[in-house]
Image 1 (spheres, rainbow, N blue to C red):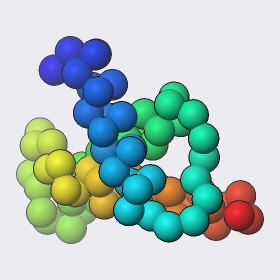
Image 2 (cartoon, rainbow, N blue to C red):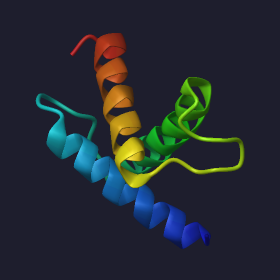
Image 3 (cartoon, one colour):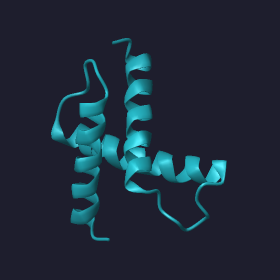
Image 4 (cartoon, one colour):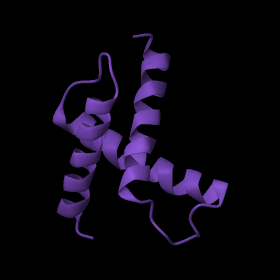
Amino acid sequence: MTVIGILVIGLVVGLLARFLTPGPTPRGILVTIVIGIAGAVIATYGGQALGLYQVGETAGFIGSVFGAIVLLVLLRLISGR
């Protein structure tokens, strides 16, 4: 996948996670993209740890959104919002 493709998927995943998670969220398109990409990474490695994915497989779209939601909740807990 190209870098632009990764950024677009990260943006879509981040926007969905922000939409599905109630309450205040970090602002900015770059933060949203980073949350989306990090959510995909969390879902990939978390799915491998749980046996849902094999090494070399990427997380599914729904798993990526779930990972981004988990990341948003953790960021809120850490930041105290």
